[in-house]
Image (cartoon, rainbow, N blue to C red; front, side, top):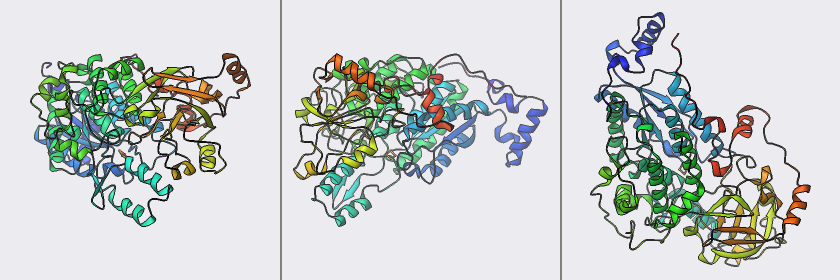
Length: 575
Ligand code: FES
């Protein structure tokens, strides 16, 4: 741990401590809010960046939790200030919340830079909030600790557990097939989201909070605590106490983030059967810290990491069960032989120290390395003439017979085309067809929406078909499942090979050999490329125009190119 700084070395001292007319203004305006000098003088100013809103359903407990963080900050001798952060939410934001991850990251960075902040507690959890907040915090590099919102309680329908997302897709297919009536469907609506907290399957939220903890950004065990458990309140207060100590020792993200901690995060992602979205977010996070994570490295680590979390959609249980079984600390302790245990974390201790002695209380939910759910990690990276820069698939959530498959393409040129034709009785499709969706990537979607789990045509659902090979440059929800090849890069909107696929083309998917091949001759592809017409971009003004100009492709993390690690941004002058 670094040596303790003095009150005069606090960043906020530049705003409050000097004898200038500007400092007079800052102090008198603090008094305007009812604070005396003794409330903040010589104390670390701690921002609590709170992504609460009335439309951010997963964070509905955050106003209460922010107060619990403040309690800890006051106790430890800090001065807490709550600052709203963009409440990126998965449920209501269109065309895709992914478009706004980078805006939250940019906002987090500038909120911290422009104001008298010494350290920050970041409050997030709903999918994009975790990477958005952490990307901004890594770039700003002030002492920062992450408080994940925690998973919601498990869903319940007629005594059966229901999992966020996963069971929606499953029972919607049954409804379309005529096996579930309206009354049953409405009863599920009442029971699937029973409390505050993020999706309680191993979706993107559970994956990214587990990754935040493995990277060292949370206190030990924080990511697994259900949102409405009293332990979550105590964790919030503990974050408030700890951030004050971190400020005094100037303990910043770049003091504990290393390439090894990012590789630990990939290993954890594979062991929990994490969301495919994690690959994009981890590449972006590493880019902020100045590290490159090629997709090939994900695949190498996946091949040596058994998946041991038995959580939906790749397994059986839910996050509440995972917590009672010991949570992430217990899981990481199971795979400790695969991890670099010397990596440091926000509490100043190593990952190895933080997971030491963590026990598994239910060996069905958290398996051992000797008895895994799957011998390999949850995500595989594919290459071939259809995806020269890579594509991903989640083999653990896929019907095994599709791991090696050849079929004829049924092509949809965009989402509207898909919606218009997928249930048409005249669509020429059978269970061996390969459904292809174009123009759903970072620029094409736009924002790479979670359309990658293309719906099975109704006429096939009625015949009992529940999985098919589907290929797109979209993402899919971490709660989704099926033989869905995602993140095809480069995307079709910019002329990637996916744009050239036509109805009837033969496509080969070979997961064991990591191959995705379009069986069309090079000559024919060259002719199609010459005839290809670049689509019009979606936005000419506003944030959409910035997004269209500067977002990178999926294999590079979809960050804005000008936000990657680079030259330091100067501190603001106080005058
Ligand atoms: Fe917030 Fe799923 S909707 S995590």
